[in-house]
Structures are given as C-alpha cells and as structure tokens.
Length: 349
Image (tube, rainbow, N blue to C red; front, side, top):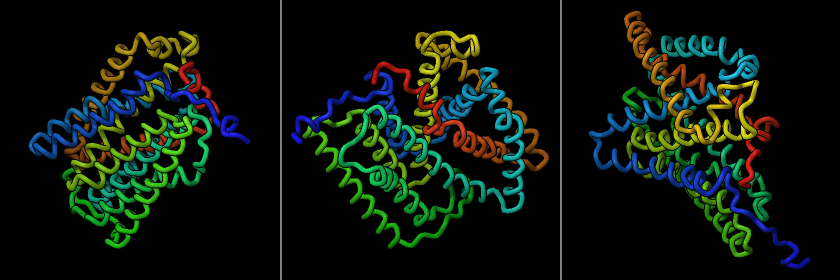
C-alpha cells in the first residue's frame, strides 16, 4: 500500500476555532507560568496573586460546575444527590478527619487529591483534542496515557521526596519517597517524552501532525514540569498549576455550554441556553463571577462565625474542594454519550 493511500488529510483539530483554542492552550498556560515567575521573583506579591487567583478564578471555577448541575430543571433532577446530600456527607467526613487527625491531614489529602484531579482533567481535555484529531498512527493508547502521566507522576514523587513540611501555610506530611525512586521516575518520564516527540516528528514529516492536540500536550508538559519540578517552593509551584487548572476549567465549561445550546435558546433550559449563546459570553462570565463572589462572601461570613465553635474556615473550603472533585468525577466522564454529543456540536473540527 503506498504512502499516498496511507496518508490521512488532517485539520488542525480545534475544539472551537484557532482564536479560542490558541487562548485556551497557549494563553492560559502563559498566564499560569507568568504568575509563577512573578511570585518566584517577588515572593512578597504571593498573597496578592493568590487573592486574585482565588476570587477571580478559583471560586469562579467551582461555581462553573453548577451550570452543569443546577441551572436547569432536568440537570437538577438528574444530579439531586450531588447537590442536596453529598455536600453534607463530604463536610462531615472532612470535619471528622480534621478533628481526629488535625488540619495537617487536610493539607496532605489536598496535595495528592488536587494533583490527581488536575492531571485527570488535563487528560480528559487531551482526549477531546484527540477525538478532534482522529486516530494517531504509531501512537498506541497505552503509550499515550503512559507518556501523558509520566511527568505529573515524577512531579508528585519529587514533592513527596522533597517533604517541604508546610503547604499553603499548613503543616504537611507526605508519603515518604526515596531519592532513587524519584530519579528512576525522572529517567522514565524523560524517555517517554522523548519517544512521544519522535512519534510527533514522524507525523509532521508525513503531513499528519494534529496541531491542536500536539500544542495541548506541550502546554501540559510545560506547566506540570514548572509547577512540580522547576519551582522549588511547593506553594509557588502549586500556584502555577492552580491558575492553569482554574482558567482551563472555566473556559471549558463555557465551551461545553455553548456547544450544548448551539441550536439556540432551549425551552428546557431558557436561562442557561440564552446565557450560553456565544454573543453573550461577557454576561455569562459576569453572572458566574457574581454568584461565586456572593457565595464565597457568605462562606467567609458564616465561616467566621463557625470558627468561634471550633470549625476552622479551612475545613469548609477543603470540604468544598473535595465535593467539587467528586462531582467532577461523575459529570465529566468523557466516555458518556451525552458529554461527547454535546462537545461534538462544533463545525470547527
């Protein structure tokens, strides 16, 4: 069979279009890396950058989840357990851990769970780009997943070996990891990345390079390398990953909603569908930001009162984080037919 027959014509594989995806892949990663560079160069600015990250991105990204859960009747009914019962279960478990073991346990659980959550989200996004790109010749699924996870695994093993003692101002206890394990993980990760690069060069030489998918992988590897390996301070490194994750999540949920209601305003979800029309993007983000500001402002007030009865505010915030992680694990399964169908409503393949 000739090369001409084997060759597959490929489009760039954007999720939406070059403008959106350029910002989604390159722009978001650039802002995250710049945030890390600023706090490394000027550590005294960390509280300000963290404050901006939390109020403009972090809280907003959590509230974005609720556009999938509670902005229309059908979604509310479908996810009633996640909305009405799971929060109390998670809060009870979080409070029990803090009361029984101490706040260090929440910091330690958060370190590993957020690493897994961020890595899984990134893998899910990469799979969306892969579907847009079509099959990738010479890149088996097992190899792709191993290469994708190699750097994040190396990163979290390094942080465990580093054992910084504190994280986000809280006492931290890590899983002990010998230096030789970190070194072996590093050799394996770099080898996997090098093999991945070879496969991409081959695709490029054949004129089959999936541009968007490749750019996304490069952004993923860069952000995780900087956040977990190159920045010595664990909290400063976390900031890079957190800014990247938050912005990515907010943009992706908006993209999902615009694709879901690509046909126009829906009678089944009139408010959300109208809000999610592309021309209403400013209103969409303003509404989400307003809701997040009101919700977390109320949490600050209520949390301050609960602090008087021995429930630290950090318990409430970590319960919200853990609930968010569990909910995301349910609603964003890319293998679910509805998610795939809603995300495939774009003409910009």
